Length: 288
Image (cartoon, rainbow, N blue to C red; front, side, top):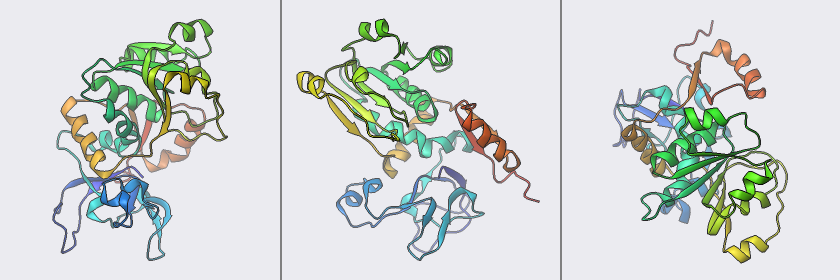
């Protein structure tokens, strides 16, 4: 569901793309086009959205996404890859990247210094750090241990690193952040992170927990703090991010692999042994 390729055919009413264009397709290939979400360029929240992979099309055919030899997609759900952006660099932005960009753009071009917290340093988290830094935010990476401290501070150029299991560090950082982007896709306690927010701060969920999350609401009430969520991003925001990435000269941290390596890649994913995204080169793979 993060697919970059070349336009090989266009329909008679297509006016946004031409043959040979380098384009991308993210998580969605269709929506109803009529609801409030669709009409406000928030098609990712349409109740009739159709996902790019592991779904069924409106005509009943299965959708295989980037594992297909070719895809048919409405032009609304296709984005132009900037010339300065290599295909393998663009691919992770089409889901993971825009998942971070969409909620963070509300803090872009702020008239005050923004103190950001990025909780979890994985596929989405590392891109969030790069985006927030490029927006001029002071970025603190929050992690459960010091294992990724060097990566956060030296490789991603975060401004600070906070170990959530260190009570003294957490207490010292209390009420210091304008927002926290929570990228953790697992159960975790919320109260320690809510306490890090300034008055009026936001804890934004983009990672889906495997179990219900619990918290006491006194911190929210006494600090005018809020919990909110964000799902992927719109097609408009996806194009914005690609242009932003090219303009800022940013680089995704990826490892390009071919199809014959895919089982090993999954094994390494299970061990959390990738920094931070595998990109599958389908066109250059041998399928014999």
